[in-house]
Image 1 (tube, protein in one colour):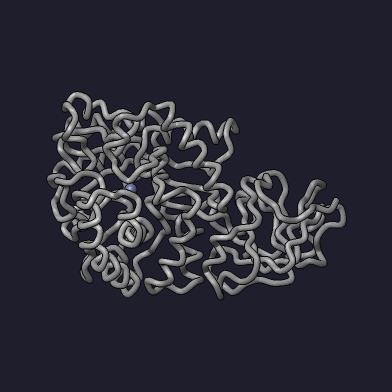
Image 2 (image 1 turned 180 degrees about the vertical axis):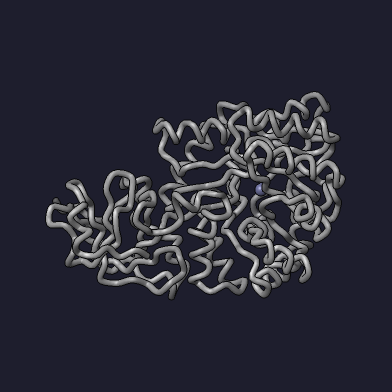
Amino acid sequence: MEILKAKDIQVIQRNNLALSGATILDGLGGAPVVGHSVLVRGDRIVAVLPEGQVPEDASRLDLTGKTILPGLIDAHVHLLGQRTMDNRDMTFIGEGLRAARATADLGRLLAAGITTVRDCGSFTALALKQAVAEGSVPGPRIVACGRFIERTGGADDAPYMPVAWAQEGGPWGPRLADGPDEIRKAVREQLRTGADWIKTCTTGAVTTQESSRPDLLEWSEEEITTLVEEAHRLGARVAVHAHANAGIKLAIDANADTIEHGTYLDEETARCMAARGMYLVPTHFVLNQLVERGAEFGTPTWVLGKAREVMTAQQDSFEAALRHGVPIAMGTDIGGQDLLPHGRNAEELALLVTGGMSTSDAIVAATLGAANCIGLEREIGSIEAGKVADLIAVEGDPLGDITLTQRVEFVMKSGQIVRSGKRMEA
Ligand SMILES: [Zn+2]
């Protein structure tokens, strides 16, 4: 964390806002900083400086008793406007309703202190990204993958619908592609519609369709390699949904960028990910909710069966990742369903801690770690001079009680106060 010297203060202009009185956790994982203010001007953090050096003309916001952290980042969500646990329901919902629901979800995310999300599969998210960026609707900044690219009959296909419908995909479905030529075209199409990332699956899935198997490989080596090469050539990174270890290896060998879920990660593969600095986004929240409360919310029994099957493996995999130092980013896989509503994203931090992470590391996973994972580490993820002023505050010490991150009291995004429990003094 940069701490300005007195001589530097002269360069600070009017219209500064000082967030004062709080403990600061900068997102870099170091010791908490006390006796300092975070100085914000416009959309940027100007400095972190001793209280006594705050310019006299700065407005002050007293956050005594609270801890300031960087805005939280969820590296794996789906802005789908989904509301039930049966994915087939999404087939019959129009794009307008989906978008309206997902827009409401953006408000919930921001109020909960989630200031950035990476959407890992939703056509709707591409429009929402633009709507948020232009200021038309409040919400977290969005990095979007557009439609996931999958083989015909793949993890998120809708085999109960005619194949022509499924190929079209709609806002819900994947873009189906088979063989290198179609895959190249599918990558280009997603980027044409504004996707920042490419999302694909090297294995089957748990929740999306009954016949999909988490241990089944979805692509040939040639297909996944083509997908990653084309995405990289055009400047986009690739996120890979992978449960089986063989699918994780397939993604690593193809030079993909992040592994989502990583349920059956073994020791050797964990070592390999750590050596490459490849991020794992473990998504504990959804699996936990499915196993604990899925039945109450009408989740199909085949989903519950598969969720129970992979639950223990996912915990073992997470422990292997921690043992070998695989970089971890916080991600939930929340889609907005009644069981999995947006706004509960910070519960993932508590699950990272239950799974074996320190509270400090869990906070890094949800801030600078997640920023690194999604490629925005130069702009967001830590409290440092020059970065975008995405800041939250909680009452008390989240290093002692990580669940405090579920009760965020102050939210600032890009220098704008979105939520504040305190009166501002001029
Ligand atoms: Zn997902």
